[in-house]
Image (cartoon, rainbow, N blue to C red; front, top):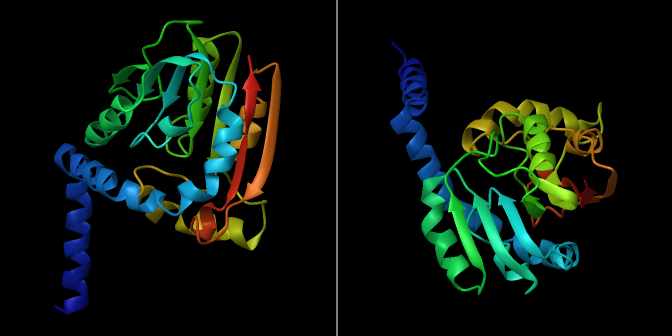
Length: 231
């Protein structure tokens, strides 16, 4: 049997093993190890936008998918309680370390964004940066965000989104999606998240479209949005 066939069989077996609970745990461990290095070129680029978006955050803030805690440095002093929904346990050590450097009450929860165990109308703001691309059901998460926000509460977001339909970049996003989903812990590069946020029932949505430079992010996740949605 040709070497190529043996190689393909080996890769297929490894792929199946990676879908088992131990394999999925290993992929999450790898994601945690790679996360900081992947984010390094992006954070300096996006820091100014984060500072502007987060400036009016106060009270209790719920952050979904905080990763390694990169957003802590941008939270204003008016935030006195922070709840983090982070399902990847391998992120928690670095996340806790980042949280300890801030004088706010931090509450870490190892649950998914879908069906998060947070009381109705209990938080002042929800924060999401590059997270809705990887949740299983973004529409359900957006409904949950509305549920946990107080009346007048704000959803503050930065997300990468689908390129215009029919464009070369959109075709590339769809082509690379299966591989990227596997490597990047469920990330889907072609989601129309701006449309989803606008159609989720918020009373007001302010949204800005921009393109991240190639030195900050791979081209297929360069179309991005940022903004605030008010309940």
